[in-house]
View (cartoon, one colour):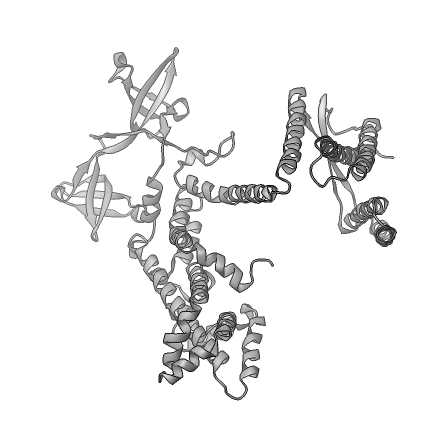
Length: 578
């Protein structure tokens, strides 16, 4: 038998033995603490069987020569992974299922259950035989990856103590809360809290990253959760002053390229980023000098920490630093390589990422306000069109009588089975023939032609409203339209709120529609603009996360103010997994 196979067998036996030992510990604690509803005889039997499995697994691990690619440490946990094509995976999976079904047959409570488990084991055994034949005929290679997780005695002992304490607390809590319903509430709330933390971590990372400097994006110590910012101080640079002027009504920061004999200045735009590299000509009276913000750095010399400010970036890459601390050396100037200097930083948020992200947007978008205007226009028209058209059609199908009503309703529902890719090209050709390409019309006009799912949802709501309300409205002289508007619609406000919220989110995040129909930046919504921003500034995670955070803010505000209707949406639409 090869060393790789022995390693896999030993690893599998060790993990089975370890898990069985943990299970035996839980059973022993249950016998010791005797929670309500415990069957001592059955628990002792399970404990004995589990202890035998644990002992057998750990003995096999101890007796198996575990030769890995490197010498194992004194304390270790074996790890093995088999890389094989589908045929090999089929064999491995079938063998595992055979063993599992045989164990279930051995532990079955009735003869019928044991017989069913034996039949399942035989079926999986047949699959395993077929897999072996298939695998041998394919001559596929098998690669075994072997390794060890090193442990120290202190870490191993701590892990064992932690497992024992956790299991004891769980069993004690079950015993204390049994019969009062507390255990279910505790478990439910713990699960909700754990889920909130797990699903909230990506959002927390997004927001924190939007306030980070580039040096904190990747760290050998893992994710940086507490951002720091470079300390900067104002400085009037006599050699290369920072000048402010206006360009097309926008404030721009520039540096001097050339001072011409006639007194005019040729300027290079530095900020905003979207205009960087643009050259201007201005008279001295049209510009204003402002101080630069220069970084503060430190260096250790002979055990003394020197703090200074970078007053000039030299052409050879070095930095000229003016010392500010200690006081005895204040005012002295030295030059050093960037690698010999440490930035002086403090805990804080780099809010500049947000302004920089907006400044990098094209000038014609007016700092992103054009994107916001287009998105709000799409959201308002889409929500309005969806609510009106879906409610009118649903009311007609639920209350009016006309020939072929049921057939037409079934045809409407059948459109839900059509994939969007099927109707994509015909819809595009229709709007192109109407001359609506590179406009927002193709994105919001379809909302005024109802949605099959929304019609179905509202129709079911309308059908639950008593006919007496409609009859009373007719007696009072209301027409169908007035009855629909003043009597029926107020009765289905929860469903309308649900449809409005989900439509809002769909319209806000709609990317495919603008991608197909919109070409010019002045017609782009936020979702499309964010994708283009990612392609342009993808190498600057801070700016990208800041842009993504600003894009999410309206949706987050909607969620916090309308979370009641989100929950109702899950219940009413049947999307809750029940």
